[in-house]
Image (tube, rainbow, N blue to C red; front, side):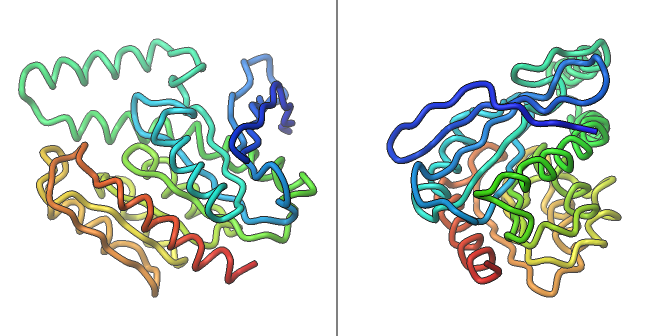
Length: 256
């Protein structure tokens, strides 16, 4: 059984930011997260859960920037957790070993994909129950409720966490994914039928075009949109965030 405890609160530029900790029954440290909401007029607004990329954290500029678009532009609530071994969460010996192996492969010019896929799958096994518990707790808040639509937005490692989460979570009604290998995730993607928007970099030096397309093709969604841009792995255009906001507005507002 998990419980959610708010630990701090601030308001700026029409956005209410609340840090929280998701606590379980064990003596393990709680999971830190953040909830962004409109400062006023947010009763029963849709919720978008986000997951950050590898090496980042819950308030990374990519996360806070996307949240700002959704809160200020759409009136939505947005929540992010620090992934295991990231942000304010301590690294385990397993984390350190996998990161060291990644850096070794990178220095040697070897493919990073097999290491990243393996490590991300491990992190997803830990993070998916945490995201489900967070959704349970957030839906108890009167400004969110149990009857509102829920979206998910995660790129890179956020996709590695998000695909198994969405595959297991019927409350999510629309999702934005992208930039990950199909290994492990393709079988889970076959169980996802909600609307999907998927980002792919055509010149990605880590994920081949064939691998990116294979993951997109695996989703069983009747409505799925592939957004392909030229550029390398870290060159996803910022305008894709605007597209994702339009996607969530279309699907979550209609559902509400």
